[in-house]
Length: 414
Ligand code: PLP
Image (cartoon, rainbow, N blue to C red; front, side, top):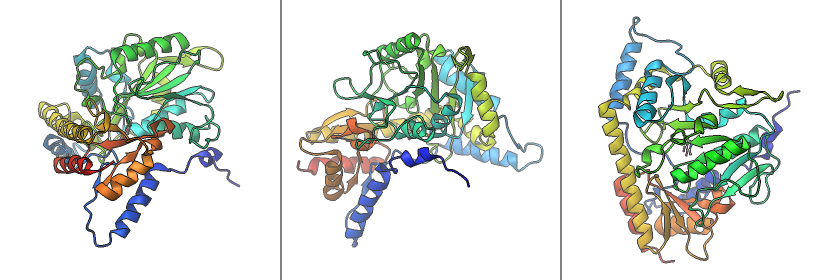
């Protein structure tokens, strides 16, 4: 008899988005005449079409695949040199950050990379995550058997939750109570809170990591949305990070690739972790081995599209795309603030994090928005118990929808 992975049975059954869908469906059924024009600001998917230079690169690559002489089959598992070189130069070297092309592993998404990285880490690590948190970090550790059961708040035994709140600007500080984390997930700009970690905050984390032999898993999926030049866009801007951090990046939000699928992970050659025999071993060969064994590379066509992100036209078009979403974020921020709500994020990130008015839980404010403004938001409690009393508004929308949402928020009576 085949035995299943019992760890999956510990997972809180994908509560957040199915529950949102259930409530939205119930609303739509009740509105059989279709009078309400529902606007969805819940899921963080992009709405705007791919930039022209990127679709042109896709077409060109498709045409190459149609000719015997230029057709490509399996590519290098780590990614084609043309893309790894373009990433190293544009995202790192040109910005004075030390990352080499052979430290970049191209993949089909950061979500997969965030989960797959656990393949090369041991099972006894003390894991730290922020609360609220991008659920993938937690659920992948549950699946890998790194946790006990969840309590009534959805917090899993064995995981250290670093509470993010107004007092710490929604960016966790390293533990000061002597807790030694072996692995910590940091996400800046943050999903869901839209907070960004300052250079001083990231330096404190790198210093903590050096002192405690901690591995930082740095998720920079939203780095392209950072407008403030003082905010680091990569953990590798911080001295010492090459010895204690892995970085995840994605083209999903920066270039509209959520449906195209391309991302990459940076594993510096100096980065090591401890083996059972006490020796220190580099992680780069392990990740390389993992990718070569379990992955056959991103399609040539998609990698050519990602390369086009770094062309002069691609850069200009992606900048316009980001300005569009950040324009929405500003409109949403201002709309919520004018309605008397306390607003966070949305300045260097495409998510606006809003405090629910006194007396409302996250789900109560969700229902109010749905029923009275016909706007779908995401309840903060779905990202962790510290998210209770907040909600997330995504700036991924058309301009007209963002403006309409801002108007509807102001018409609400709390
Ligand atoms: N990391 C964070 C923080 C995200 O919010 C997301 C997507 O929403 C991802 C990673 C996943 O990105 P990808 O589309 O590359 O899988």
